[in-house]
Length: 123
Image 1 (cartoon, helix red, strand yellow):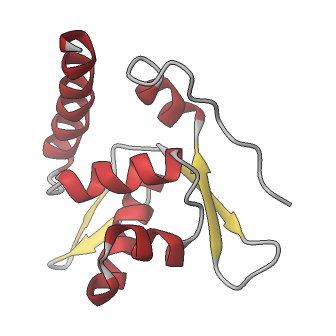
Image 2 (cartoon, rainbow, N blue to C red):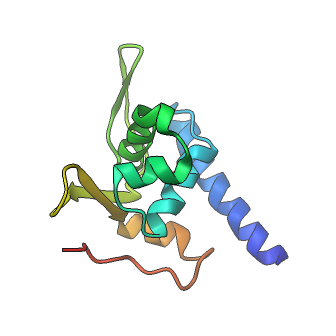
């Protein structure tokens, strides 16, 4: 159990360090959304429901875009994301987008969750 806790702490430190370097405040909600996508929650609406953030749907979208590696505008300054942890595409059956882990995301989470696999796009 101690080893698993150390692995989770290392994961959190990696995310925090990269976020601090980019100047983007990254906290538990960012890691929570990454783990939900890794667990198979693949839509924006699903992420909002899973995080109980119905009042902050825009924040969930902003975090997902950040995890995807998009540049964010904040106070008239562009801040590039240091991450490419998830991928996004237009959802084949519903309005909106579908998310999954990228290879970089899988590499980050694999030491903590050895049985984790990168899902194929659901058609």
